[in-house]
Image (cartoon, rainbow over all chains, first blue to last red; front, top):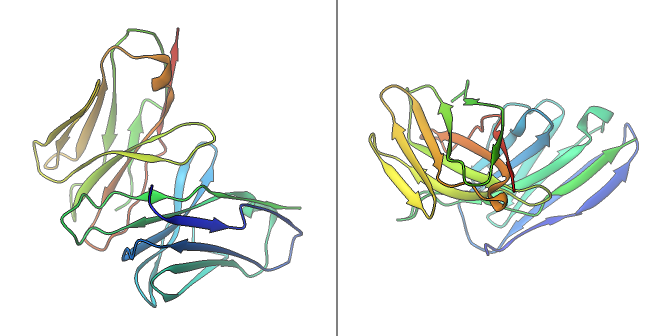
Length: 115
Length: 111
């Protein structure tokens, strides 16, 4: 299994509070992604990173920010959580530049509930 | 890469039936097409990554084809089993590394 861990795995918070989710990898993969799982929508891309300090927006980036100060960590921050951000968040990593398929390896997910 | 469409949204079949799903995507700025299998309460896992027009890949009873010129891919499951029950996601990938998923096809296989 790819070395990818998400923390926290479960979090309950209140509307208006800041929340940071962490994705940590030990694979030295270049690309890292944050997705959210929503019924009827599958997985929707929030932000992704194509290198240290290189990030770009996805489909549903409003209300989220990210940072990647080193290869192994990709942080997702909700500056002021809202109930609509209640979801399961998945981190994924990929390294398409090598002689491999570039497939994504997913973390186990972080369940966030905003009351 | 936007406007990824998967059909059908859901499918109920009997054990032993063969089935197929469709993934449609814009053919411009295409780099690769990914298929993932996502079981309930688990994380998605890669089935196939295809890059060339006409590519065909197979893993056991599951196979996939790719047409990059017209922007579609088919996933086939031969002789469905209850353990094949899952959501199947496709995602085209562009040169930037951005990977947008379709909404998925949820397959239920009844014993």
